[in-house]
Length: 270
Image: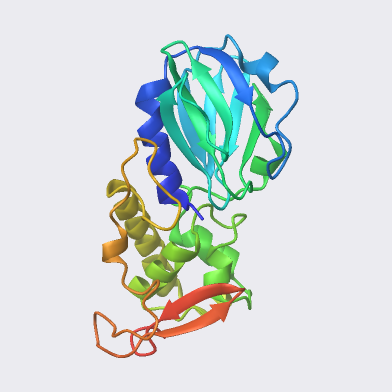
């Protein structure tokens, strides 16, 4: 699943190609995605000039005068810039056709992505309950300490809750907890303020580094400019269960936590 760095990489990849352009047509080949593509979407977007491309959590927002096209990449979705007359493949479900002769194309083999609409001046229900952005000034050690207080849930599952903080997906939760030296199963409410401060710092570092290097290249993700990410080679624990820890050489353990693969070092993480 594309995580926050991959989505941000996509945003940065497509932004130079679509910002300032006018949408001349919307082509919907398959409206049955995770949620149906709104029937009136073509009417709402056609003729609109794209004034910015932003992100909220894992949602990409293509902002027009009348509102925003909200795109979620789901499990296997990706966005590409293609010539507007390029034939569509079987999994190419939606095109935003631009006055440049190019089109922004959504490809989604598993169809767990979505293309929705947020009217100007309103906030979509899917965005209302989202927690702060992890790289913003709202995500602080004090905030996380307050949210963790009294909570018995494992810290890994807790920081992956988008109502606590957005965009800390499985890969980067594993990596941040390793860098902070915190065991993924430790109760969120049983971690000192000092260690939570370190965790906030490591979440910021691991996500910023991944964004800078173009996201993590896994199964289906390719950046919006067609270039894959290069962060996978720097992963310390994710996908390395049974291999030696880079720091202490102990064998990394892999478990299932909340139905997600979780890898940690039994010596470095407490």
